[in-house]
Image 1 (cartoon, rainbow, N blue to C red):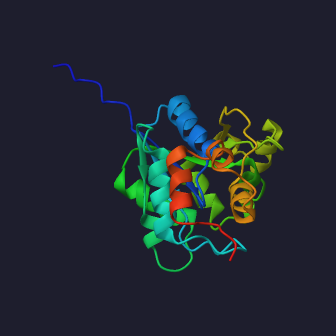
Image 2 (cartoon, rainbow, N blue to C red; image 1 turned 90 degrees about the vertical axis):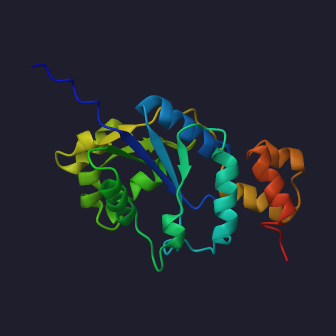
Length: 210
C-alpha cells in the first residue's frame, strides 16, 4: 500500500514594528518577504508597550488602523493585534512562542532591519529566538550586514539570512517630522506612505505639533 507524501510544512513570517506610521518601505519589505520565502502567511505585528523606545507612540488603535490600510492590498498578510493587547512590556519571544504553538510544524521567519540585527544580542532571550525562527535581515540605505557578521554567532550562522530588498531611504521618524513641521505637502507624504495611510494621517491630524 502506497502512502501519499506529506504536504510541505507551512512557512510563516513575523514582521514587527511600531508602524507609526507604516510607510512604503514597510510595504515593499512585506511583498519581498512573501515572494522570496514562499510564505503562507506574514504576520504584521504592531508593537504594544515599546519599553525600548524613548518617544511615546501613537495610540494603538491608530497604528493598527494604519497597518491594516497599508498592507490590505498584499495577499497573505495578516495584521496581528496580540502585542497591542498584551499588558506590560512586550517581547518578540512571547509572540514567537505563541505563533509556534498555534502553527505546529511551521517554519517561522522573523524579519528585522540591519539596525535591529546590530543590537540582536541585547534582545530578551535572543538565544531562544534563534531556536524558533530564522532571522531574515533587510538593510536600510546606510548599511547592510556582511555575511561574516553571522559567524559571530558560534555555529548558529545558519539561522541568519538576508532579505533581498531595494534600499529605500524612508523612515517613520522622517514622516512624523515632516508632518509636524507642516513643511510637507499631501503629495510629498503620499510618496512616502500608501495613499490610504496619508489620508488617515490627515483625517486624524496625527503627528501635528500642538
